Length: 157
Image (tube, rainbow, N blue to C red; front, side, top):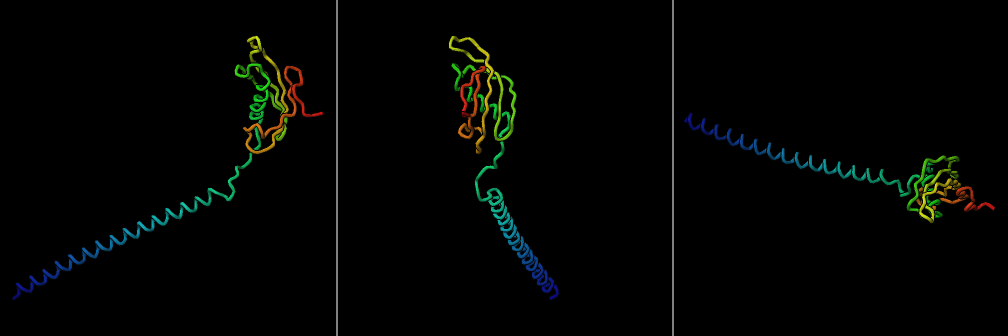
């Protein structure tokens, strides 16, 4: 009889152990699902936050005043328009005076004349920045263009 009781107790312990292991396994699975849901929720939260931070309601770029270097690049475009062979133009160092919104650029350009000879000319460009993207020509106003000592363009009367 004692042996049967011991076997019965061992059977109960084994069943209890199996039940305990199953309960632990079920709790781990629940914790895993909850953890996944928490991580997923955090990801969605941060995506929404970054979407609002990245867009301040208007999609305008912050306007930055152009530099003298940028005014020099624009002046080169004006000068190329009057050259006989603009594709041969080689611009040298420049001097820039003025500040936003009016710039005066003095420089030299080597380019081919109508006979194919390379000629150096000095030019002065007085230009005004009107706003928006600096690299767009329509955002600049040519005030004066002096090329090799001759006033080629002046909007001042």
